[in-house]
Image (cartoon, rainbow, N blue to C red; front, side, top):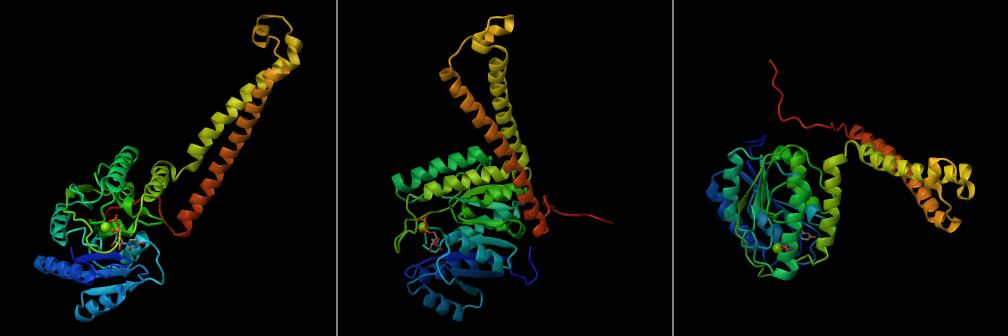
Length: 334
Ligand code: UDP
Ligand code: MG
């Protein structure tokens, strides 16, 4: 399992103003990791703290060679902090953990054992979550159900930071916005083998939580984006084009109907069986149909154009980074 420089486990700790928690967190991480008898590193990412967190971290790093600190210039958010930790990590297994002591460092061992069984992602599930019900657990339960339903990734707790990832999964994932909660979904997109285990959870006893209920809305928006990525990110013309063609055809049928009525059955002329469909209707009654048909025609053209622009964007995305549209597990040659 060891990578080049022989670091087996990278612990990634994003933190913002957690000065009261850091000494105990470090002690507990140190104890839990020493017991494992493996090589490890702990990467603390100071996400723009304005308390004394950085000084405490420097003291810790000065006595422990396994500790690294990354200090941001300002607060960039938990996703960015985790991402920086991943980018600077060297371990073959990467395990992020919250700095507020809500997660239990002793659970790391269980996560590792599961990874060794052959999983690429082992997700922590705070089965006994110790946070308020109305503002925390309830929105979280609903969000988790929605994510399972829309993505097909069957986990109970996407929001738990404590998860273990095999290095190559993380290397193939780019995080934006607040996407750290969706790493298992992004993992599934590249074919990762995913499981979950129950982990401990404790109430926050020191420091402030950094999130309010507005997080729910942001999760929903990210979910819409992820759902889109999952189904059509490599072929936008297929979804926008299809909707565009349907809209255009509907608009065309209605406008054809109105034109035929106007040209061949003026004033509701009664001649032949077709006239049945073109009975006299006043201009007022035709007006809404006319507006609808114009709207549908325009929308159709717009959607097809968006699909075509999407195709250009996708090509730029893949070609500018030489990013293939597939992910290889291994290649075997003679
Ligand atoms: N955090 C961070 N940057 C932020 C917000 C939070 O690094 O902008 C860290 C925070 O210090 C903690 C972890 O992310 O270590 C989880 O945050 P928090 O405990 O506030 O979230 P909750 O447990 O309330 O969901
Ligand atoms: Mg917390």
